[in-house]
Image (cartoon, rainbow, N blue to C red; front, top):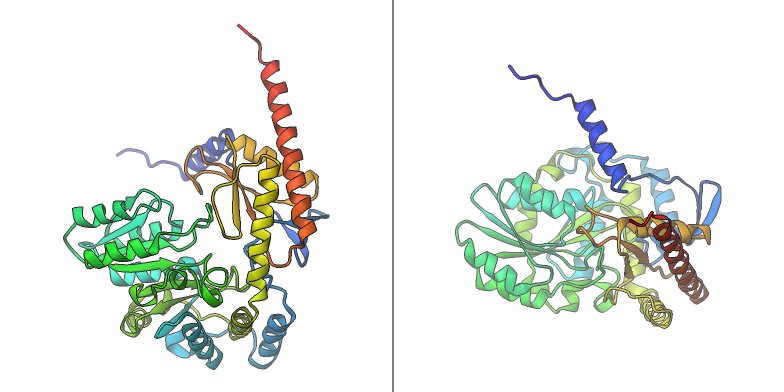
Length: 405
């Protein structure tokens, strides 16, 4: 009998491989937050890597709703939604979300990751098909793998590629799943073309709009509304922890589909419901996002300002009209060096490396918030230009130090 692999040895070997490739991941501990300023390791930094696009995570009405509800109802929901954990404020939040997005029903879940697992696993089985964009979020990819269905991926934002995959796999039920706004590139999926592909092949279109709702579309209703496709996208995902500043997620769509998820989706049935206080905070955030359009107007102006100033300094950004503004780097090492150089100047910008992005596509992922001031963005662009020069100079020195044959 062969000896089993030692898991500790395997883990150590994998850790060494990550370190050699410059892909070690390290948690940073935030001590305090004050708007877009955060204290990290005893130093205050201007934060440009948060998903708090509308600046609602610390908004006083949102915080008050959480505190008041916790004082009345306690900390936790005490059980799953189907046992005794479904509170009146959960119900009110689901109805508010459905009314805002323009969907018949909504279903709250613990996170966007769980929501994607719930949808794909509840709808698809071994003989079915899930067609996905190559750059979809990891939760959608994992959901298809765990569901046991056939997973087929098409080139990024290529609706014709999606159609070919659907045509080439005609057996079984089919789900066409895409991000609405892509979290690492900041671009928006071609939803109208994808809806046509899904319709032609009798597939269900599912849009993960985690980074779209609150930010794009009329009244911030997301990429589906921006594409005028509410009726053609039977299911879509809304997260509560990005533009809405809280935690959790909801799946919205046809009443029959939502009811099926509520009765059968394992990540919904077998987990504790969100704390009522957290649901109350998200309810307050949704109401603010709906009525305070100035937050989105300010974001649009900031995106335009950042892209204009970056172009003036020769910084090449990926095409994006959303608060996600990626700056590609030539290597993982350059991305890390750029992030470190920015931190030295007082800015926190995340270096994103594979496997979060494809090989050779490491980047700085700059994100903007309605809490940033114009002078914050000017200072960031200046710091990016300085970081670019410093990293390039260091690379030249390192190259000169290599012995020549």
